[in-house]
Image: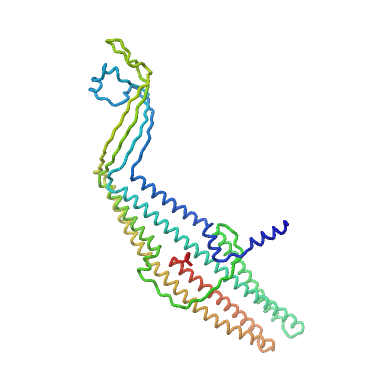
Length: 445
């Protein structure tokens, strides 16, 4: 039973994954994409933080202070002291002052700096969301590219294995014929060299496949990738025209560049806010407490009003509006404003570069698709010709009408053309996937 379980687990671990299954698994477990998702959440929390700051803040305050000279528990004017019953003897004082209260403060006007800051955080959140989506598109393309590259190498490896087998059989036949005296030692050496060269190509293809699988495993969060599933490739020969300006502007890559321009504009607004006055509203309500510093005894009557160490309290509250206006900062605000304007100009140039680059990349991808189709048709025609040529030359060689060198050269050309035909087919698929990536359609296909 235990052996059966081990066999089942081994079979499960070696189960082939289709391209779509590989993409789904990678999107869920890729480390870089998970980090991008966290960045989006961080941008969202920062945006929410900026939103909350617009409504001010409420603080609970508590403090303890020890003074070298006694303090009253509340601010008093001279007339309030003189006018109190029994004069100053009714007023408690303390060197150990405790305070507990609650305060509220909100900015009423700051030249719209806070509003600009919130709008910037909103734009940055939107930008991070777009970047996350583009990251998914890039990851899908990378997985597709690696998966198709593995399929291409595996198909070449299968063809190379067959070619190696045929070369080994040819070598065995030549060895037999040499024993009979119909073939020379030179023919044997040529056949051995050809067979060894084919084995070397097999080893090279196997190493490349292993490397690509390891790369794909890294994208999948270090899950071991072992087997692929066949992929049906249909070559679409329809002409795909370049996109118009409006279509390019609708792509998220261009939107992200445009968001950077908007953020730069908000930075200018934020810096400009330093030229305006700052007005805020504040309110406080709390109580002061402390042990009386001395025994307060009225000299004329001898009456003790407050004993030393008696705890007393007083309630204090205040509301106020405050204005602060910076009239001179020795060019600091002017320099920051100039830097923000330069950043805006730079963002506009980068946005224009993004549009130009997108247009170039899309046109290049479309041309690569056309080139792959043309190459595939060319190599397919060559392969058919060389395949028939090899059949004829094999018969001629067996009848001693052709040298072994010519036969081996034809076989090598056929296998090279076969490999080029396989590459062209899969290059077409890669170029199609790349165009989907540029058009941001990878996740929808």
